[in-house]
Image (cartoon, rainbow, N blue to C red; front, top):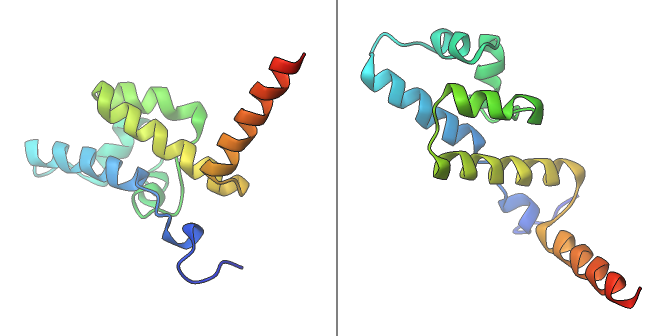
Length: 114
């Protein structure tokens, strides 16, 4: 169980914010553009989009490139989305960025020895 104020409690996924911005942009171009339309454009179920936008689900890595292409995301936006997804996956696996860096350093030191 996490203690108050820990890194784990402070973590908030921003994947849903990135996709909410993409939906908002499309709605600004067409006020009648709906969540259902957004889901249809992404070739997914509207409930799937709803869960992502509410932060209850994340994008599976198998769908990532397709979603980036469909939304015509800029290089910067797609990079931000990928970074956020990596953070989500790490949290899901119980890993912290600092642990991952320590592991990479340990592996590079081991390679130098061999």
